Length: 118
Image (cartoon, rainbow, N blue to C red; front, side, top):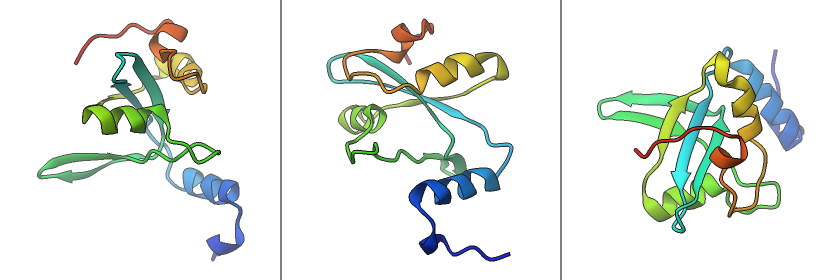
């Protein structure tokens, strides 16, 4: 089967790519804004890309309106982020943390998820 991605909408291309590698672990990425607000977001486009040096890649797309997601803005500002794997028991909280919230609202607080400093 051949698929011409140039003929697909961005949503169709995403769906084909996302369903091509399964099961796919979810990275739960936490960052902190310059104002000290903790951010937490799930990312399914995430992979180990090297063992020497140990390197993990997380792909953070822009929002539909072209603006940067809080995760990327915070990581660029601080140079830091933490990556956790999501367990099955955390699936409901992970889905809740995917909601788009105002910059000044922490997903940890909004979803009642405990956090600890890195």
